[in-house]
Length: 166
Image (cartoon, rainbow, N blue to C red; front, side, top):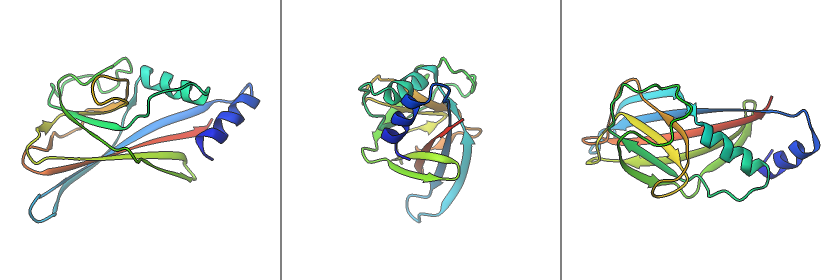
């Protein structure tokens, strides 16, 4: 089911609800050999602002596309469950994925964004998905268990947003 079909269905069902969850996958590779140095998959926080933006999309409102993944080197001591987070603590850079992929499977409707960083960016202790090349709405963020090295390695981040009817 695509988002347009979901919008129509939601308009017709007054008791309908949606469940949203997100998942980050971070893969570090040696830039010369391509060898995978580490891989971490983790659930994340969908922010209040991000949830409101998704609700606006489902209601047919115009919302700037989420297309930017940002990394930062802010303190890795933040509250990984803080839904009021509106920006990274210390953003270093962000890259655009202007062509996210969509798929439907048993877990729901998935949208996946991908961006690659480094070498030369930073040791990433936080990352997020936003809808602008500067500022913008933070849909989701993550504080990885172990900092990711986009300073000396290539760091690829995949973010999946999974939406299904609750």
